[in-house]
Length: 504
Image (cartoon, rainbow, N blue to C red):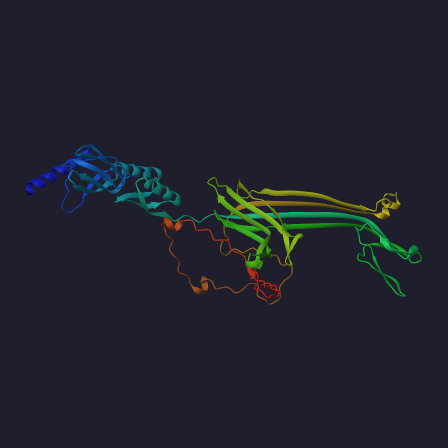
């Protein structure tokens, strides 16, 4: 019995080796062992013939993406390997018997060699090795940068699930970009006002005034035995009064000019490919009414920022230029458009913002958000009829003319910079007034290595795992402080007394 079994195994192994070597179909005589399922191996892209001693009624493969089974004769099944992996093959024979196989599809050696050649072609001079263990692909070695590591993983994933065990050479220090921003704002305004008010304290037995109501007339208060007492709200008027006629007038003729200049030059330093922001301004509170039960909601105080702001993202391109995504903004509180909510005065925000993306070399400048705003506002009031009389009608007219001119300019200059070398003098601020004599010029500091001795230095690593160079997650935006004010509930109205029960 034993020589026959050994001969059977010999011929089965011989047929498998010849089929795998020549690329032809291998033939396996299906015979269920006493221990249960048997192992069946096939190479991806190749075929295997399973023969049954009896007629086959049905064939099933658990995962059709790994292998497929095709019945070619009543006693033969063709198994085709599709993709590396492991699945089950079940054959039902006539009479109720079943054959169970653990079908294992191995990757093709030719395909593995093709992937190795692609790695050598795409990553020349870099030590990258690939190996297969079961269904997993292990990638080992050292590459130059993170991009090369990602490319090697993408190539290895064509064989199956890849385990990345690559190391990356320690990259050099990232470049630093200094962004110089200049905000220049000039606001000019000129106004002219001309008007007259005529009033009487008893002339022709009348008391009152004639005015166009554009400029307020003086107020006369009469006291017994003292005559009229005038109250002037604006001292920049020409006041005329004839006591003998009980007649007076005020003439308003004013000219005004206003000049506002705003210059801010924030300098901001950022790493290559990292966001940076700058704000010179403040925060103001805004009450927000939250919905509640029966309309009695809580009031939440939120804070909004305003001032000179700049957000930018610099990126150094392979051409050596700097690509900028920049958002400069100038905002201020506008109380002329404020609203009042439950006793709170909420100012509006006057904002000028621009967002752009541009590419330029280190040291070059560009101008954005150049804005010219010219406005003329004229108000004219007169008393109908008498205000149309030549010369005399000027006393019954009022005119106000306001002209404004606003100019805004934003200049941005990026530069590649390096830190100040140790031992070099640091730039200081020119103080117009000297400090108190005897006071220390600088704050106390920890003594250097000349006093404490050399500190242990961590050795520089020549290579690090690729996971260590992963991009850090962006920090969540810090929310401003919030104050919650809960108003007292309103008293419920008293129910009128009645003899019967209250209506629902």
